[in-house]
Structures are given as C-alpha cells and as structure tokens.
Amino acid sequence: MDAPVIEVLPDPVIDQIAAGEVVERPASVVKELVENALDAGARTITVDVEAGGRALIRVADDGVGMAPDDAGRALLRHATSKLRAVDDLWTIGTMGFRGEALPSIASVSRLTLTTRRRDDLAATRIEVEAGRVVDVTEAGAPPGTTVEVRDLLHNVPARLKFLKGEATESSHVTEAVSRLAMTHPHVHFRLRHGGRTVVDCTPAAPVGDVADGIGLERARALLGGRLAERLHAVTGEEGGVRVVALLGAPSLAQSTSRGVQLYVGRRFVRDRGLLHAVTMGFGELVPRGRYPVAIVMVDVDRDGPQRVDVNVHPQKL
Image 1 (tube, rainbow, N blue to C red):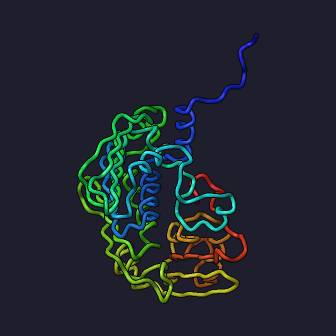
Image 2 (spheres, rainbow, N blue to C red):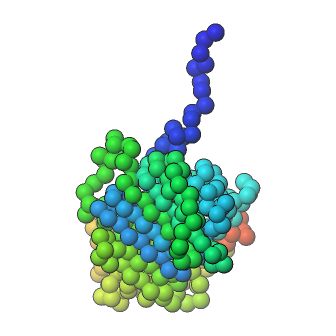
C-alpha cells in the first residue's frame, strides 16, 4: 500500500508556520505582548529590549494575571479568554482574540512567562524553549504578568538573517509602542532600549469626553511639545461612527504619509481610503504631493451594523 501523500503536520511545524505570520520582526512581538497586557487591564506597561529585540524582549504589566492552569493553556494554540463563538468576532472589544501570539513567539525563541493574580501567594513561572515547555515552577513576583523573550528566531536562521540592524529594529519597536500608547492615554507606558529610557508616558487626560480617545498630553509626550502645540483637536459623530483627531497645521505637511496615523477601534491600521479622506479634508491647504500631519481615531459602535472585520489581516492592520 502506498504511503499517504497528504499528512497532518506535526505541532512544531504548525507553530513555525504560524510564527511566520505573527513574528515578522521584534517589533511585532512587542506589539502582540503589549496588546495582551492592555487586554489584561494593565495600568502600567514596561518594555525592555536588548540588541533591537534580538537578544531580549521583556514586557511587564500590572494587569489581572493568570491562574496556574490558565498560564499553561495560554501557551497552547488557539487558546483564548477573549472569544467564544464566531459571532463574537463582529463585536470584539479586545486587542487580541486568536490565541496565536504566545505559542507562535515561544516556538521561535526562549520564552519565560511569569504571572500572578493579586490574591495568589506565589506566581507561576513557565519556561519554554523552541515551543517545548522545559520547566514550570512557583516564583516570587508582583501581581501581573511578565513575558521574557530571549534569542528571537535563534532556531530559524533563514529568517534571522533578514532582520535589519539594531538601530532599525529598535526604531520599529519604538514605533510599535508609541502607536499603542497614543490611543491608550490612561495607561503608563515605559520603553527602554539597552537600559536607556526612550518612552515614558504617564497617564494623560483624553480629548473631550472620549474615554479612550487621543490625549493631547500623550501626543505631547510622544511627538514633542513643539509639534503637539501645533495640533488641533477635533471630534465628530454620525451614524454610529465617532472620529477623534489631532490635526497638524498645514505648514507641517510632509513629503510622505508617515505623519498620518490612522486607528480604528484603537488599532493602528493602514487604509488608503482613510488616508485619502484625511488628505482631501485639508483641501488646498496642503499642496498636491504633500501629506498632512494627523492622528485620527475612528470608533465604530459595536452594537450597530457589523462594519469592521478585525480578522481580515494576519496582523490585524
């Protein structure tokens, strides 16, 4: 009898394939871990990276933490506390939902997960190497969760060689943290590169009455006071869609669109339609071929029509 041509892939291979979607570079690991911290209700999130994230990525939060059994399940593929049925995808209010990030990251690194709920006497620490759990112990740790990722992509040399230099990867990490910090002004964000603090945003007041809007104080902390002083806050709402924006003076126009930051439901997105709408909104104030400086957050009523599919892109962009 002939050997079967089609076979079910073993779990390590599946994890490596999934990691190809989730782990594009160190910044994508930071993004996934910080999003998990936000979903855990963290009020303070500290990110440490070494060598642009290749040697070390550590994300520590003061969120709710996990029970020992849940900590183990969090490292299984498609294990999540954020989704129960298909219909939940259309009303999802969390940053993550697939249950892919941790196991995917663990499959291409040496990962340590330390977590403790506030009422637990001890934390749970799980060590994973290339997707294999090597140790589970109790440990002393403050309430919350810390995920430490070392030697990222050490077992996938073909992908490791495509990473850029330390300065470039560090810049991408800073950008990822800054984007998440911009739309979560109530959370204290810290980012350190090699022990040097590059982002330290204390909780800031949001614009108007939008509880999760864009804070002028947060924009000042991330963009610098001189630029933030030339931003004008505007809000609008129609048909269950609310827009909060910080619009830069036309004189700040740039030759690229990097100055336009677009968010839908607090997620950073890349969308040509939205970019075009923002650019056209400035009319003749911004010359053709130039782009404004603008931070725009669109929030769609989750109880209304199902108009946003956060599952359309592997990285939810």
